[in-house]
Amino acid sequence: MQILATADNFSARKQIIARHFASASDYDQHASIQQTVCQYLLENIAHTKQSSVLEVGAGTGQMTRLLAEHVQSQHWLINELCAEQAATLQSILPTADIAIGDAETMDLEGIHSLIVSANAVQWFDNPLNFVTQSAHRLQTSGQLLFSTFTPNNFLQIKTLTGQGLYYPDSTEWQLALVNAGFENIELATQRIDLPFANPYAVLKHMKLTGVSTSQTQVQSNSTQPFMWTKARLQQFESEYWQHFSAQNEEGQPCVNLTYEVLTVSAFKP
Image 1 (cartoon, rainbow, N blue to C red):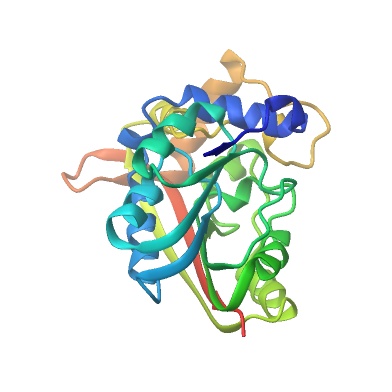
Image 2: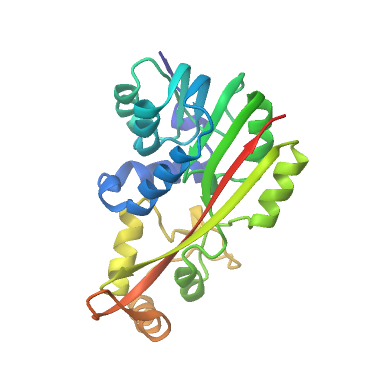
């Protein structure tokens, strides 16, 4: 069974996000950090037998595949923003209901025993509200398990361009979880510095994983849309080498891109 919503129901910002990810056809080849995070989430699922699992923002199905292989559930509800992913997700879990649409605004209420979201809630207009929504969607003793990123994520890009998504910090997430009534709250952060041959390779990697410096889907202090020009690219490359140069494992010059992952596990009493 499929539950479909058209892009016409999305905000302009969400439509652009959906287009960016729909065009990132080689996402899985380049999203190694995201895959590692999915594996970490899998290892932190409290029970492999569930009554109802809701996955929010399934994307290409990195987390969905792990769930299908390792978790048994009487009911599956898999949500994703991009309609292009519906067939892939259905093939991974043929018995699942596939809910294509904006998880912030569509009805995903239920009595789920597990809510999982990998690398998605940072794209929400109000990421912290995901906690409140999840409290309403979980049954008693249900587990909320998700990953997102900290304000240090992509710090090089933010420093050099002033562009970046808004990431709540650990303290904000902790407060939101407590206020929503969750217990047994565990938050963990992991920093990974990914080496690249040059700054242009960093930008290519971001594009291939659905991330853009487009002002429409990021937040900055400027009211002007961010546009790349030849001069800006040259300045970006020069300053990236100046401030963030490093050496890779072979001792060759490189530049780093920082990922800082936040994983959260909590239970509804």
